[in-house]
Image (cartoon, rainbow, N blue to C red; front, side, top):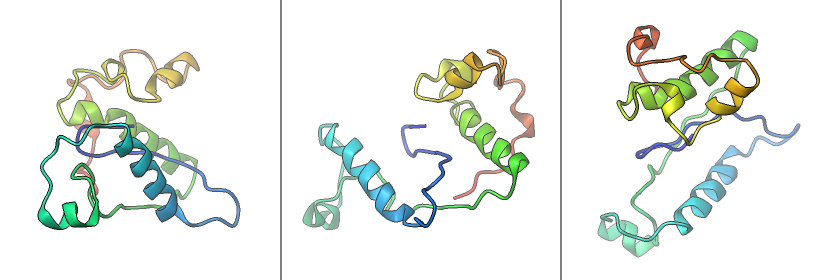
Length: 124
């Protein structure tokens, strides 16, 4: 899920592959190359050829079980509501939420701004 100031995802790497850093680098590069450079950048970022739209670091977490997986997917889907970008998860177009609704895993009215009180504080 792409948000204005960050992105969130839940993914499974191939067996024996734990190099998420290279995958994040490729995702960020591909996304950045598709946008014109309009953001403010520090002299250091300009000298390094870096964009000003990404944090330099990322957080990763190993999913523990099915309940943990479901909680992290929920967190991704509710993020645009939590950040005040939309009134309900269905209003954010750049999300797998719509696929989950089509599969019957969420009702269309899941995660409205009224119902998000259960969400914990944000990691990272």
